[in-house]
Image 1 (cartoon, rainbow, N blue to C red):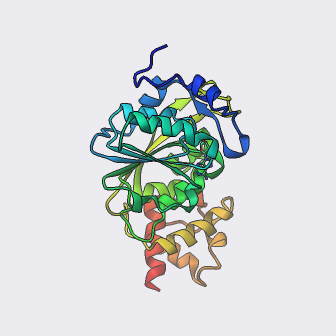
Image 2: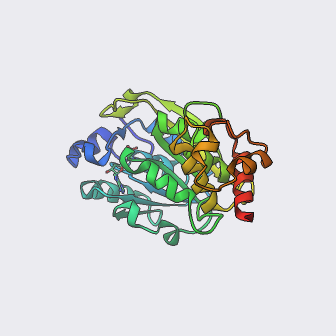
Image 3: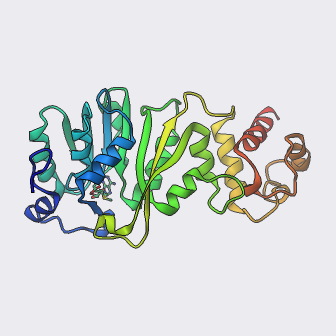
Length: 280
Ligand code: SAM
């Protein structure tokens, strides 16, 4: 069957390069090019952007990004078996695709690309959350990227966009929503992947805010939310008591009932509490 870019269909690429999926590398490939182009479109207009893709595998999403007009793509892939297949794509798009055979956790990708930069990836499940936390926690904000369009297990996606008083609400929601607008833009069943994983997946689109949504010191906010959610069933006067001898007074001054539990507290309230700790 003819493809939009004239390259072989992904099943043939996988066969030709003997890319038997490795579970240890989180390899669940997307082989439907309509779907990969749709994910690329979820990130917005790419024509004036550099794109960082982590884990291109046989290149289904990479090809979608290039078909959708990405100015330049840097694709970082840990599995050396995929590199020859990716170089074939690079040959069809001169100067638009750079392939790096490396562990994405060890690469300072922002230094290798030109702004504006979007990160778009079907992330390996084993390092997806760690990469997201790193992208949301740089020493200086705003970060090198403008938006993140990322495939996660559905449960992780729900933790990123969760609201207070829901089961998935926790530190990941607070971190993501403090610094970004975050929404789920697509749901995918296991059968969309080869091989099919056990769980459903979802694509989350995060757009950075130029300033965090509410003023707070990052380190203090992290410390408070870690203590609060590490014992999420406990009342805050108990889970946070190690922070300050007068924790009940501090909570009350921020309009937070000392008997409330972490999952009932909004991002705005956690930021207010962080500011009062910064002041003591
Ligand atoms: N993008 C492809 C697709 O959508 O079909 C493959 C996605 S697959 C879920 C994840 C990819 O990430 C695999 O190709 C895997 O080899 C790669 N990978 C795993 N760990 C990695 C790491 N630490 N750095 C870079 N790539 C990694």
